[in-house]
Image (tube, rainbow, N blue to C red):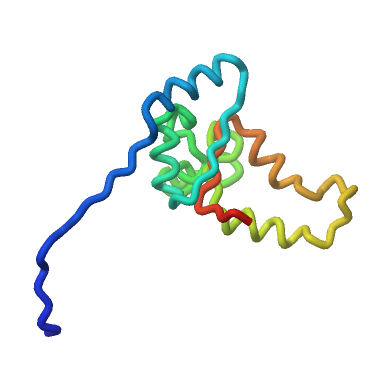
Length: 128
């Protein structure tokens, strides 16, 4: 149709740095909560977070429980250990609360709720 011919196929693999998984475990054992912030897409971010011990059980991640297990959002929130938050949602929530007074206890509540989970990943984030 277009006169195009496939001449090749390439695959990329960008593995985590060596011993990141061990470093994360060391931090956790010392009581340090590790939160991952990445520009990767949520599925990639979640998989990498699991590979480096930030997410211990991917089946206990909120979005997986809602989308794959078809759980009610409230029940999934109560039962999940991990959450992967898309940067667009973070920006949207931040914009919604931009007009709230800085002393309003509701300002940033969404963020506090998210980071209250034991395992947290922010995906598709931007420098802003």
